[in-house]
Length: 364
Picture 1 (cartoon, one colour):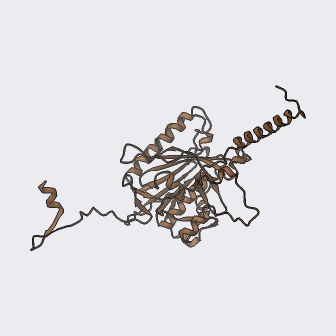
Picture 2 (cartoon, rainbow, N blue to C red; picture 1 turned 90 degrees about the vertical axis):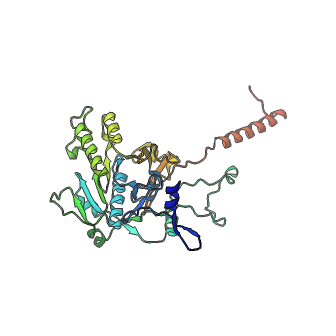
Picture 3 (spheres, rainbow, N blue to C red; picture 1 turned 45 degrees about the vertical axis):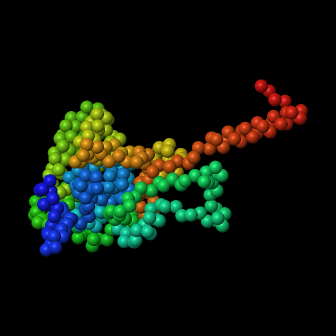
């Protein structure tokens, strides 16, 4: 016990009065746009979507790989990639973008514009409903048995702000975009190594598609499946030993062999899937009228611990507003079957009463 006590005691004054000093921990190098995780101390960066950061445990851990299974039309997965890159531009991170479908410069020109408004204004624009106005005749009237029930909180947000907000209706200023250090797949020249400690964000768009020369999406027994999984295995190993984070989108709905897709998911640290309602029966279903698709969490990382961060709900949906892309808890309207049954019983009682007077005959 002498050694710990000796470490805790800072100094002794002349009057035999001891003063205790707080033990200081080693200070990490401060990098813009990062923060340590409260669960495992891993360095985190924001994905650009605050609600997605909340779902995956606070953000993307540096040195990990995020896999995004694309929706059928690659609309929302492409938007997540642009959010990921835009957050890197605002934070001053280095970028590497590779794509076989569109030129990386075209994707960079579509990055959303950052919003510099206060947090309170952003919470309102993110979809928190305002109190109804009793004087407004167009206000929706709720059934009496649902008026006193607690309101379901659908928004997903952390108590501490992390990352930035963006307006998808506007594109980023060219001056801000050109100030970022971005490397693309088409520029294969060797770049000088920067002496400044910074985070590198890698974005790979539609990896495994036919445009990359792979046959994973064409055959049940593809010949290049081992090449794709080997690449992900090597990429994940390189990320572990570097100050980098990667987002890879894969057209999983085109993959014929589900076993290959399962190996791709297991080779990733975090894996999510986007299911769009476009072209499906759910697009016209009134239950999903407030959403544009579903988000499925396939896998969450286990870093420096035996268990992963488990989200409080697995029923998640996303919607694209005029300015923002948000992820919320899936909240469907209440079932009205009890109301219908109550009306039926009332009508039956009225029918029995009229039968007693002799006006109607009741058939059993």
